Length: 222
Image (cartoon, rainbow, N blue to C red; front, side, top):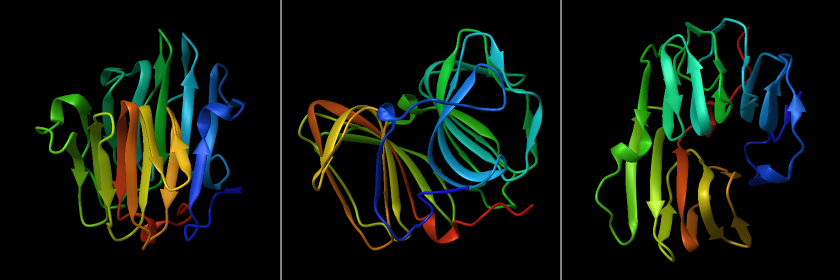
């Protein structure tokens, strides 16, 4: 399966307008944003766990990165409430689920295959002091990518001319960029060489963003 797999193209997906699609596990549904591959895929997805649902135990051969958008995600490593950022590197394993239910934004098969650093962070706890109405946290940085989380006051601007492409998810609030207005759960991917200029709406915005990673995009190595 290929979905939004042309990384030279700008893509906007308003995820809340998509229908939920069933996964192979009962009670776990998803909205696919981009994908290369079948059930084993380089994928960016919003996944919803119904209360009491779970996935069977599995190993993340290509790594897994996710944000808990609402509810509480759970596995044998602990409880992960809304606002948590998690990196499970290649070779890591777990049995995910959620007793109360949750929704996560998850990226699979997008790691450096030599990465073995596993961690979790409460994103808001990492925010630096605001500058011109924008408070930003660096969640992860390596030679391939930089991952950040930002709080924007109403009318504040978020800009980037980072090499290697730009991807963002609006976690709350709204921003306008070019002719697009992105609201909660809207996802934008911009190709290498296209700069970002986004202005927060009247309620401000909370933004997850990754830069630098698109030149490394490829199908899973299985």
